[in-house]
Length: 234
Image: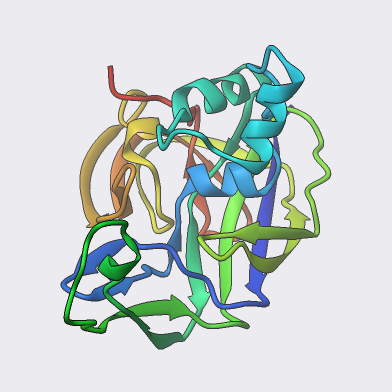
């Protein structure tokens, strides 16, 4: 039996992550990647691959190397038959913050400088009270956390989850208006057309026309591909 939760996320702080860098501007796209949501919702068990207490604590509170381990961390969710879609904006606004920093060469031993030239950058963030929507598909009932933290600043957000009525399945040509991770759907569906949302670590697609099996509901707008699972480039 499949359970599908329609989840709404409301920001209580401004949300920042660098989707793209344009010169000195660091911009946050109003789309939240499904990898980020898995971590924020606490679905990734950080102790699965830890062999010592020290490793467990270093992963939770300090990352000694900037090497992502998405495949290692997310593959167990396939075994548990849990899948989280990316989140789209229901309504949002942006704020622009300017920050400054100085040339700190004079702090380096044996290095002198006659100049202390300040520099600056701008961060375009998603404002508090912005709302997003995503889905959690699972083979068992889940209790999702009410409060999570997201982004570079660990911004606080509130999650509300609504279990949808028993989904119906259909097969054929359909359009999914929600953002999707292309790696997770292209192996089980024939993707015909889409719009690209450029963002790391895997660009997303939306307004996707595809052929294959899908879930639909009394709400005709919601159509989700069946058999979505975390897949990674070989």
